[in-house]
Length: 187
Image (cartoon, rainbow, N blue to C red):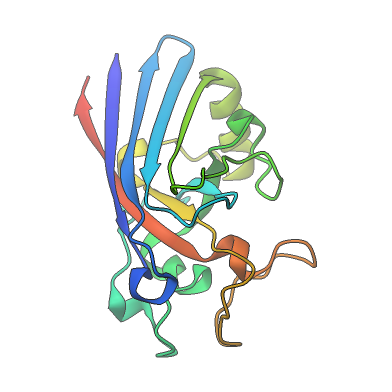
């Protein structure tokens, strides 16, 4: 069994008023990818999109730092993470193997800002869809970064914060609140 883990640390905490943190674990056992993620101190009563991001060419992704705030608005937005973390790859939602990113099937934090997510994913279906979407690329979990996104609609964001997907999903949905590098812990 292959096992991977990410320590998920806060992003944009000084701007959003919470220091979201947690852990994600991935284990591959035969044709099952088991994913578990637990978060604390996220914005309460908000749906939190969570994904892993990376580069289709196999380049190692990393967690953003303050240097990624290239427009100097005080926020590291989704677009600003791309140079170091790559693109959004696999959603940690109700059906990761379908790789449908924009949807309403992500976890919702309780009134204390806590939630946990656990899913068994058909591994081969995920690999097939992943290779189709990313030109034959390998999953390479240890080259990916887990992101957690989402702040309340009531949080006033400057116009400079990018990340709007369509009329339904704006920067409040996509603003990163935590990230962690996935590391292999056993074969």
